[in-house]
Image (tube, rainbow, N blue to C red):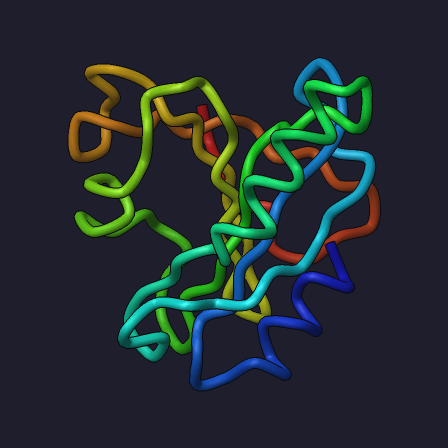
Length: 134
């Protein structure tokens, strides 16, 4: 978590993003990806080549994709309407960091937030900003 918060701070004022890997809802590692959004100051888009490679690796027995992370520089760690419009209802985790705080959300059909996300518990030993609530 500390590394992701540092990446978020270093990336300001742009949003940073990447892929989370692990098993059973537990993140074991992450892979930063270039933000290729047309307006990276307000939006994020994981480089499709990085995402396709991660999906291909997973299918070949590599690390399982648990979800994604991105930052909201100078803002809250609540998902935005744009985040919801971009999220597939695939059950994956969306971790949002802002350099200080963090919150985790699961992308599902008919979620509580914008019809797409439900808050999930964020359990990070020694991490700052555990703000997700059930």
